[in-house]
Length: 219
Image (tube, rainbow, N blue to C red; front, side, top):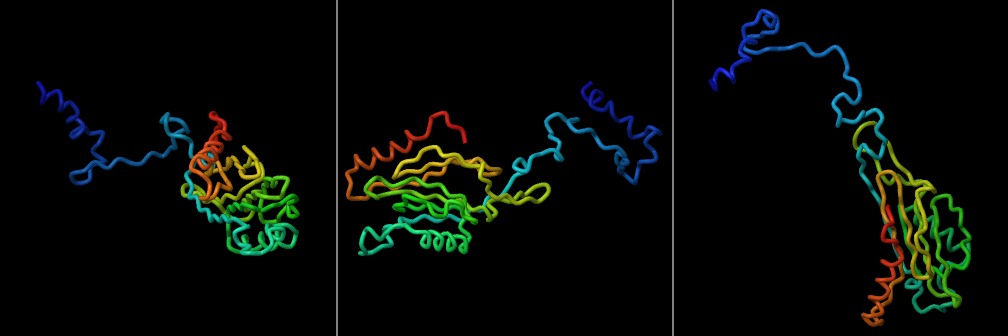
């Protein structure tokens, strides 16, 4: 009984309908001359209507970070930082020449951002305290490709201004939400307490970062 139940399909080997498709010991059926409609298989999405970010992408970022004040050596504190349009313009040009995609600077001491509309970067700033200390600057490239699709039609992604939102902004901390094709993340630039601070002070600062990001915040 088991053999007969499993061999009900044997008739296909001898039916005259299939004689034209036999080649030696194999059946060769012609390929379909029609194209199935989108959604015919249910779970398979229509590839033609996929968004670029749904096709899969390779993300390539070149990052840079620096405490500006640490570059001053023993110079006068009042002359350190990124004050002045010449310094800011020079730094942005150098970062662009190095193909930096995202940079974060601490101790910028910028009360005014002279290059607020850089031709190479989208800039976000947190001001220093009243005495002039601290300050954060984040830049995201307008011109560099940050991701490239790996399936489907080739496409390169570049940052746009509406991809970013400021989550938190203090003299020692700047947090951005990045919601772009192929790249969704929380970007944190912070001026942490140095090793001379107590472990409790350092832990408190780290906890303040977590507290600055809403628990239900979606990237």
